[in-house]
Image 1 (cartoon, rainbow, N blue to C red):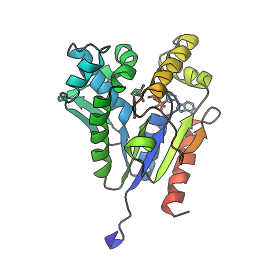
Image 2: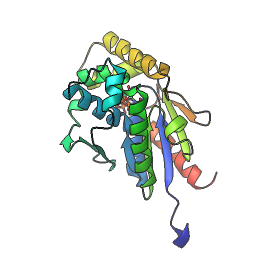
Image 3: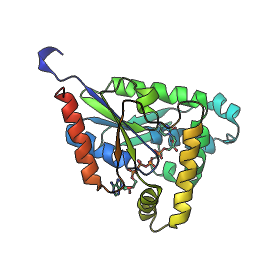
Length: 228
Ligand SMILES: Nc1ncnc2c1ncn2[C@@H]1O[C@H](COP(=O)(O)OP(=O)(O)OP(=O)(O)O)[C@@H](O)[C@H]1O
Ligand SMILES: Nc1ccn([C@H]2C[C@H](O)[C@@H](COP(=O)(O)O)O2)c(=O)n1
């Protein structure tokens, strides 16, 4: 680049539910001065809109017909990420159980994926210093030319324990079953399923603290930047 400005760095972080993608991505982006995009929040936002507008989320053709209607905006400051639908802040409602239980069905519809993927690519292309984008298909489909691809994993037991801690002691078995069911749906859909890209670095976070995972990813980004 001219004037010695560093080339924007694009980091893709994918993995199943509860592996630490959001926590890791936000911390890495904040530490390295990069933007941050939570693509799961975008799929949750469009699901929230479908539910609130009376669209039958069990009917893929009804979802497809409405997919272009909501305006979804993501704020990419890692210290204060935001998400709005038609100007309404939905950061709270998109985490509710009703949306969580329907998001896999809505996000499996090809018209929804095409719409959201286009948004994601535009946001990544406009990130001045670079961006950490987290989701399920970032390394495989959304940003196949990302500078660094990470695939986070963790045992179902560790992921359930983390989630039930967040949900103030929700039953561990029920939480484990729910996340296994959502991962199975996300992995088995036809269009851009949850998958590890061939060139992604896999990091098993089961026995690592969040801080250790963040350090590991920051080191990998710095090595990439240094051309190692
Ligand atoms: N390495 C870790 N050790 C312990 N807890 C962790 C670790 N990484 C993340 N957590 C905790 O696990 C919970 C889930 O993390 P996070 O939301 O980042 O996962 P995720 O992969 O983005 O999940 P989802 O895909 O469902 O949004 C959070 O409470 C987070 O603080
Ligand atoms: N790139 C992505 C990101 C998310 N999804 C879908 C599948 C998930 O179950 C759901 C919610 O994601 P989360 O907030 O748990 O990260 O959104 C997807 O299909 N592709």
